[in-house]
Length: 383
Image (cartoon, rainbow, N blue to C red; front, side, top):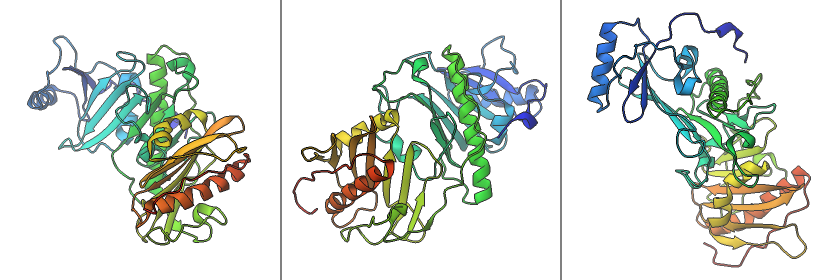
């Protein structure tokens, strides 16, 4: 995924700066001129925004999202046709390293790509425990190499080095994430191409963020991504490819489809579906990166009934709930989190969680080469 063939041409940038309550820029895709400028001003004023600052030239040479993305990146993102607007809050301008960049395109401004620099479950997070739903899903693939991040045909993320952001060793990492708001095209070749675009774009955004924060570190762009995760027939005797792991009778039915994240990375995610057309009914997730595992602390701590471990077993704790259940234990000196999420609620969701999560934890700790993790599941009603 090198970029030599796409080096920016030495032509004037198509970025214009606009100022309102936040930083706005307008990226014109046509020939710059008075008519375009007038149309843009009208659109901005119609949206209740201040137009341009006096004395600012229409094409200032700045790249979008605090200097991270050039024209080629913008052209490849799913932003429709016509001009592109950008609303930015650069990282480091406010609280900690947080920042955001909202790109809007299309003739009817109906296309949108959102970029965030934030700490999931951190003190200023907008989502206390929902980041993993999108960004640790089974359609994501690891970026590989030294990059702690993942990409799909709709989303991507990359963790920033703690020495740059100032994150404590026990805290979740600050991440840059990109969300197109979609789920991919569904055609493998097009999805592979868009995944490659989003993997490259999030790396450039992360490098732009590091520069904005005054850090010297830079990431190499991903060279090769693993196979695209695809739905497949589920095996009742080996759910998510784990021999002997079965879904208990208390679940709604036997899963028909499953999709597993691909490649070697700190996240193993598997989504299952009870029908032959979707895979969003049940998720099994393992996170063996200690920083990423911290992102799931609220789920581990607050999902429902407390879970303990038998005497003499490795340290661990968790909670069981009707929708989410999670367990955290130590493996080879680092914390690992195992999660069960049920979107299509079974008739007896807690009974399903009581049976399936311990089975999954035992199988996964064996796969990871950890000491066997046993859970003491409290007695209680079946549902």
